[in-house]
Image 1: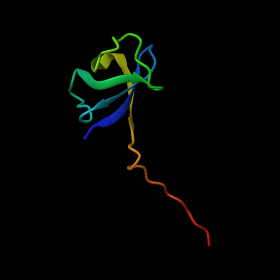
Image 2 (image 1 turned 45 degrees about the horizontal axis):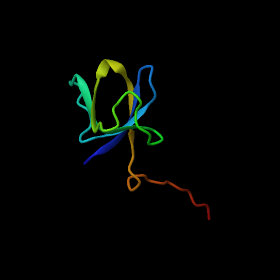
Image 3 (image 1 turned 90 degrees about the vertical axis):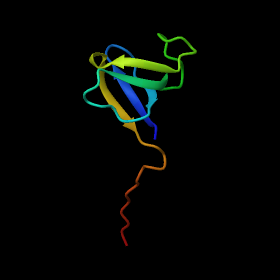
Image 4 (image 1 turned 180 degrees about the vertical axis):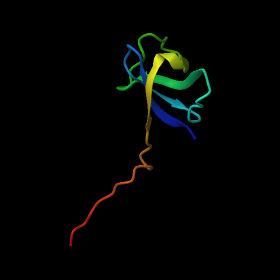
Length: 80
């Protein structure tokens, strides 16, 4: 299952991408498929035909795992 993630890179704009598995804490880098900016535009420092990017962990500030539309659970309270 592919996960959508938002990568906050140091001193750069956040990059949206997909990973096959959640990152391993022991790995030295993060391999991301389909890197793009939040609004869907190409990342300016990548070539337009780039499909996979490798980010070293020392350049990543944080990651956000974006839930799929079907995964979101809405909790509502009904007062009768």
